[in-house]
Amino acid sequence: MCAQEKGKAVNDDERTRKEKRRDEMLDKVKEVEKEFHLNLVEFNLKNNGLGSAAGKILGKLVTVASSLEVLTLDHCSLDAKAGETLGLALETNTRLRTLKLRHNTLGKEGAKALAAGLRHNKTLQVLDLSGNGIGVSGARAIAGTLADNASLTELNLFGNLVDVDGARDLAKALATNKTLVKLDLGLNRIRDKGAQAIAQAMASAEQLTEIGLKLNFIKDHGALAVAKAVSVSPAIRSFKLAGNQLEDETLLAINDLIKSPHISFDLAPRVALLVRSLTVPTPHSQAR
Image 1 (tube, rainbow, N blue to C red):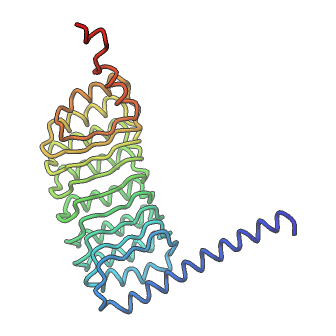
Image 2 (image 1 turned 90 degrees about the horizontal axis):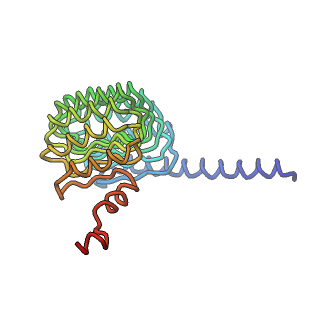
Image 3 (image 1 turned 60 degrees about the vertical axis):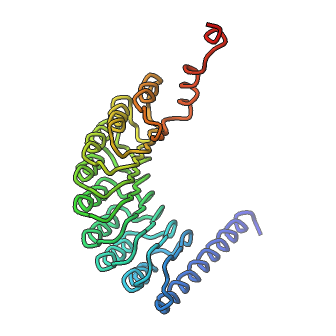
């Protein structure tokens, strides 16, 4: 057998193993679907490549399982159709508290469907959509829900192709929302204008305790705006700006702005060394 044929055989075997594992997990979900009387509280199906085939079953699970509070579906190859099914299920669900959908392929349509479901849902508190490529229109749909939603406390949109316009939409919602305490917008493209919009909204979001804006192409003006908003916020305890395009002077200015020992901030790996180099006494200064 030539090398090319061997490579093809290995790929076929790997594909067969993945398909077998997916089928096994689908069977497991179906078994759970039949046994709702077991009072299932938490169900973790991450890393199983379930795909859209599991959408209807998962939707029924969320709709009928009256005891289910935490559902984890990270890395399950769920697409927009699965998002539509889960969105419909959320409309009537009154028990689910946490829904984790990290690193699927929901896209903007899946996000819109989930947002529509959240408009009617009164109990979901944690929604993790990181790594789903929801884009600007998906972020806008989620923002529209945030303006009215009174249950969601944590929202993770890390790595979702959200740009300046998406950040502005989320900022408008943040300014009126009174329940969200944690928002992660890391690894997006909100830049200075988006960061400034978020900073302005933070003045009204007095309940917000954590904000994540790392890796967002933010420069000095945007970072300083966020830092100033954090410095006067009554609730913020953590903010992240690491991986942005900040000058050393800006890093030091932010360090000076944040006086409270109760606030932790992540700026960049080099900032700790930079600050330490300016604050640790030298032998000469000690001698004085």
